[in-house]
Image 1: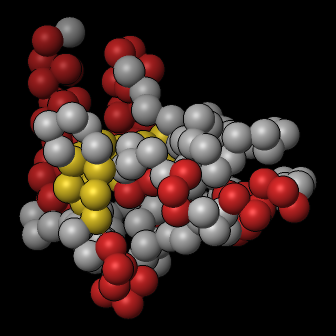
Image 2 (image 1 turned 135 degrees about the horizontal axis):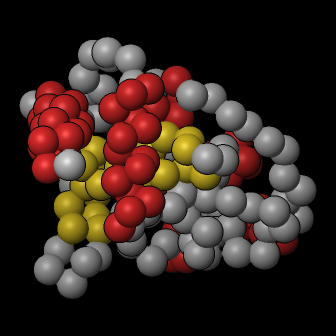
Length: 163
């Protein structure tokens, strides 16, 4: 199962026309701007893949300037089977943000997004109502999944009490 565990559960896929010159970019690692957004769990919500910042890959590190690195980058595909390559199937799945250099120029591409404010609250409410109990995904550090599920419950209990 991929780092996008919840996307795997709420599967949705569409074919994109990816021009050969754009597909050639997929091999150029220098294009990565190290935002790390492809290294977070996500779920499809209202037709978009939404990033869940509380669910980062266990090997993701973000420095003080916001640059993301992988602690096991050279061996990532051997040690982290959930790690996604930039390739046709991952692009078609929308696993990269809209402004990612790898997907620029692909007509109709819709990738991962971060929600803010009221829309984020609605998303978490929806998620808490629709998520089925799942074991902790292997890509997470110990306890992160449990903490995330607790946050969903605490968030809505607290909100319900304040209304």
